[in-house]
Image 1 (cartoon, helix red, strand yellow):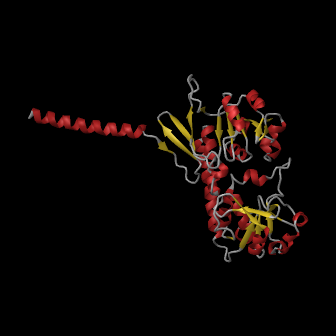
Image 2 (cartoon, one colour; image 1 turned 120 degrees about the horizontal axis):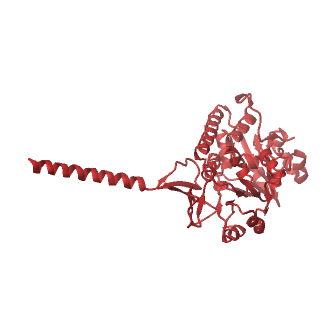
Image 3 (cartoon, helix red, strand yellow; image 1 turned 90 degrees about the vertical axis):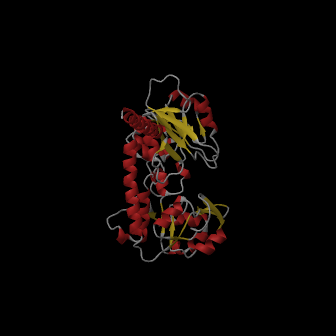
Length: 375
């Protein structure tokens, strides 16, 4: 009898041991955070730290960039890819970074920016005017000497198609650099979700999740409202930029997604590509001359300006019917276009703008945030 009881106890201990080992293995296994729309970054939780993985640092990037996120400020032997959070002294290099940082109430952490006249936000402009944010050159050629003198804890940069040379120089000098590829996202909500990237850096993940959740909810509500538009209107976008070549959003771009979610028939929705298309003036005129609306005609801000550049514009139906809407008229105090700064963070407002333009009765109490009718 005693042998039987002993055997049973041994069996139970073996089962418990296996269960505990399984739990330990599950605990130590890295877990990815729930990033719903963005494809350019991941947050991986592992033991006592997180890994911020940038999967799309720039166009056609063929490798991931991993950054170890830690709160341990006493650690002496740091990895060159380790970021201690919360970051208190940061350099950012794109105006699209500003609204996300402000929503997290961390604009005081910004100590440097390239050509700050592009920044329109009143809160950050006040910091610039007070000398809290220093000029660090231009985005394509950063002044590494000024950056080194500022001694930031982190430089948040971006690059078009290869690792930026000036950022490489900064990194080789011992400063931490991280790439932000928000502009490569294919959907409006994908771009907006990069606020979680800054949430990690400022140790404000819960706040970032909450802010994004509100933006997502507003966007999806607006998308459902757009379904009530009875007649699907045709729309074109872009303008002639150089030598009668018309640049417009490709069918897989986040701009095309805005138009799709607005229940518009974008005439180039079936084209391939996530960026822009460069087409001949003749082909665009043939296809788009009778479009009902013309949303975002390049950098033009008036019809007179358009005609002075090329008289063909006045032959478009949207030109004749005054259904051209531009975001280029609303600017900050130093000339920066508000749309290019704020729209990536607030796609819900962009979508509401377009719905208001097409059918104002669906959003009777809403006023346009970015767009204005071109006159």
